[in-house]
Image (cartoon, rainbow, N blue to C red; front, side):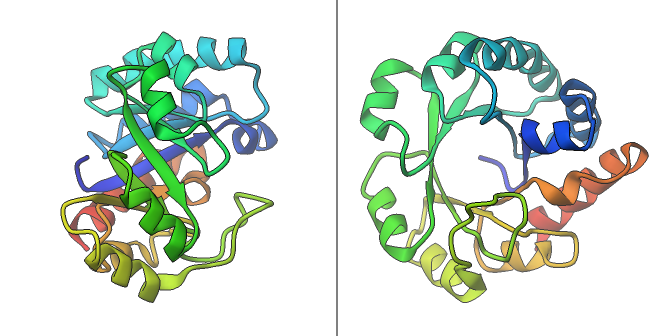
Length: 210
């Protein structure tokens, strides 16, 4: 994974803001080749997820951006995604690879213990968070903080770490300085339509350069 912005297209958040997902994705992708874009569609059926993922896949390919799907390795594989992101309650990584051979696999962690356990797998990257307080998830885990992010990144040389939770333009440089490869963002991208591309570009620059 390249350093920078890992944009999360959270369908539930976009629906609450009356923002069409494909239009929003195009604005994010217009920022240039960011680290990745993930579709997160918790309230959609598998059929609905597949339809949206199939529409997003060529947009990401044209922009040179790896495309990930949250939770569902089967849908990710059918849509031709580059990878799948798994939570703590999703399929184990080894089973996900069996279901969707060839996909990259990332995994969430919310504590040092979960992070260390994830390192023992062959996950392509490990996400850690929330680093800062976040309102994007109603059931967010306790904040882990920058100090924990820094120490765990130092303990995982050679493994891509994606920080998540409460990342904004004001603190994005701290994520890169702490050693994370990328920063996953939902809320900070939900700005006025005319500002989405510029905001995504600024976040990518801050998360790339520290």
